[in-house]
Length: 224
Length: 225
Image 1 (cartoon, rainbow over the protein chains, first blue to last red):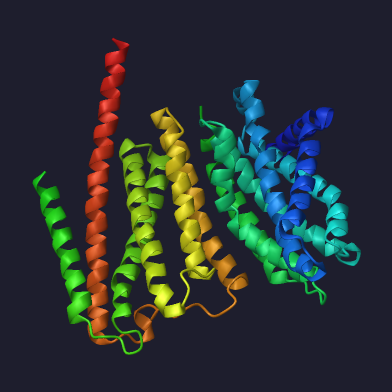
Image 2 (image 1 turned 30 degrees about the horizontal axis):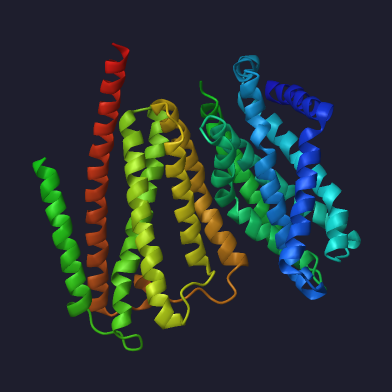
């Protein structure tokens, strides 16, 4: 039970730290916006091409944005030297990861929701009727990105060249999420939309597998 | 020392024998002719490479569990050898594909997941170069190695189920797809040869890593004095 109460307290801390400055949210949202605009310059999409490419571009932008966003996740603790006190404060170090990954998922989802209207306008894709399922896809995809990203950012924070290392370690690991979520989003935004439940299920399985791995091996990631 | 030399000699002889067998013993394939003979090396390297990564994964788990330096040495050695063998796969594949399919590369499930696998282990080795402290390097790279290996089946199935437009290329598949008996023997022999070669390289790389860490300890002692 203490795992949940610890997680809740730590999550509160994460959210408070972020909402004091809103640095992460604003920079990430602007970053996604820039990527979406630059993509449209790079491929100059007509309506049909846009339908074909846009979901993949959206997820690629989310993936790149996440690898920027997660940089500060453990780095912040390191620069302020608060990680050891955090570890002493909780009985199960998994609570630290759980809080951070929930916070990361929330931040990622918030920026995504903020960017969706721009995405719909730029690429001329009507989203409104598919919004509930789309949010579900965004949620399971972002959760997977956050779980793997939180684990990897704990690794990269302890290495040299950490800013470069995080995307390098994280992006290949997230290949399955990119493949499946852009396909599911694609068929959802198609002219004849289909909800690919199998794909959503796969993303949930990805989340579950990496969550279990983090639960099993998380404490070693934080060893002094 | 003696044992390692013998192992090396056996590995080299086996690889030469496998090369000979794949050119002169195995019968000519009906449709692809001489081109098909690259298969003996291509698939044998792929299997040996996969087994090297499996060994790396086991070594990573053992390191996290038992914290012996030797597991770290084994992990890095098998990852490097696996990477070399996977590189062989990624080079021999397009050599075969260009005349057979007319293109060097296609984003098919097997090709793509092999490539992602290759990228993951490049990242693994890169991570190791960016952490100075030996124990931290061993632990963190072992953990990343575990995550990477868990990811491999997910990569494979995600691409297989959602990305492959056409059925997986039948590169005369595994033994189940009706290989000619002589071909099958030559193929299994090549697999054996590549595994012995991989074992030899892993042992050598392991001894090198061991020496490196001994030198490192000596250097630290000298600096401390």
